[in-house]
Image 1 (cartoon, rainbow, N blue to C red):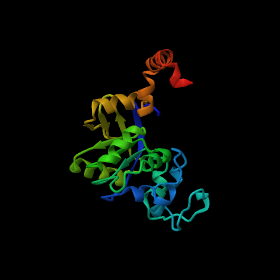
Image 2 (image 1 turned 30 degrees about the vertical axis):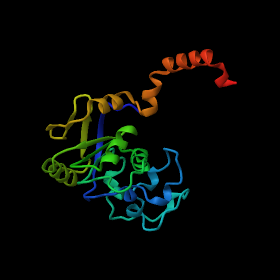
Image 3 (image 1 turned 120 degrees about the vertical axis):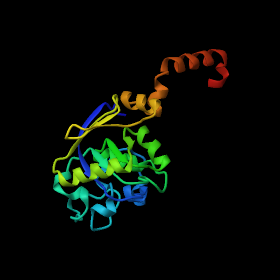
Image 4 (image 1 turned 90 degrees about the horizontal axis):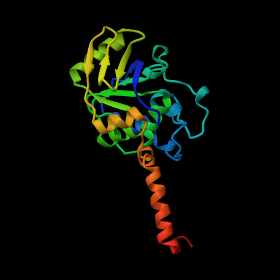
Length: 212
């Protein structure tokens, strides 16, 4: 998992509440368990005017010009502004995979579905909960200012607006440490690789018949 430190990213406003995981990555794309390759199908039913299929080349598909991610001013965005209950619905881990593969590193919303919220941390995404009033102002600024960027500093737990205003946010200390160091669940386990190897060698010596 890629370590997270500071993201100074172009910001895109997704002004919809209760965005579920089937909207984030539709069910037909769940056949693969690879973490990569889902970015072109992020919000597939909203981004395109046809029905997408796994393995399809998306470069020639007709795009919905009214969907915010298709607007030229938001291309290359790394920060996503969202509304209440983002990531609700099924617990599919493909949802954060698709968001991360598209290029997002930060999602800011008033609230998230619990399983989606936890899955984000495990896949290199930083979900930030902010008060709805603060989000309203960020949405307003983002929508009225082309090239709007937010600087998110995880170590300092701050979001800096283009006008210099600094917003503090909370994050669980353990999740913060994991993101800063790029540790997913496997990475956390491999921190103890020497102890694991020593245990396995000792066990093999004590119980060789287990390995016959």
